[in-house]
Image (cartoon, rainbow, N blue to C red; front, side, top):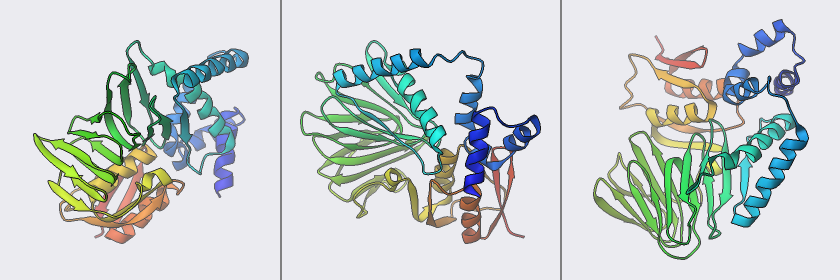
Amino acid sequence: MENTKNNNIDKYLSFELSSEEEKKFKNSLEYKKHQEVLELFENTKAIPFNEDLILEKINTNKSKVSKNNTKVIPLYKKWLPASIAASILLLISVSIFYFNSINQIEYATISGQSIQFSLPDASTVWLNAKSEISHNKDWNKSRDIELNGEAYFEVAKGKTFTVKTPQGIVAVLGTKFNVKQRDNFFEVHCYEGTVSVIHKGKKTILKANDFFNSKLLNKRKKSITKPNWIENKSIFRNTPIDEVITDISIQYNVEVVLEKGINKKQLEYTGSYDYSDPLETVITVLCKSLNLNYSIEDKHIYLRPKK
């Protein structure tokens, strides 16, 4: 079944689908899952393709990467056929420096995509799906990062390394930690070393295996060596349903809606999924565990209590 799905995507990218086949494909869950990337491809159909020019730009950008000691590695999901992976690699290679402004260097990911890159001091960053990060070009002046979304950092020792988000500020010297900021949710997990977290004017110090959650308002213990999303999976343990559906929405580029009758304050989920799993499989397992029904309309998934 997976080979058939990938074959349809390959044919779509190669303009080999008939009008009827393309219409059917665009109504499929597989198209909706990858719609953000496929629409980007759709919008470039009419642009003349000059392979030599694009390769020249890629090589130029690679040279810039080398000079800045910055390496970008896309963390592709297992479901991607080679042709799509190559296409996205091409897009990233050309566009990653599109965000390279006069004073700032910025990185951004779309739904279902994550990247890994190195900073000028050899610190390493993993940027999760639907996230943005930026830093000043003059890295020697200050190691300051601005983050919207989620990122995992392995920080080289040196002067203070600061991550600023709309919900709080994280400061370290040399350590490994994860920062997650989505809307009003803010969480920091320290895996190694010491992390200082400032949230709503209150300072909290985290040691290895400590984590801070803005909903809990105090630090807790969680013994894992790295965030699970780096391994292309999400694991939930008594996690509020709001956090679960936000995670699914980000990874699959859909909107999950809780209908009336669901007490989201009391509903918690324990389970997991790989980012290579089909969307419908993820939703089916979730609903079976929580005794819910679901329906899918376009890019919206509606969850409701079983009658």
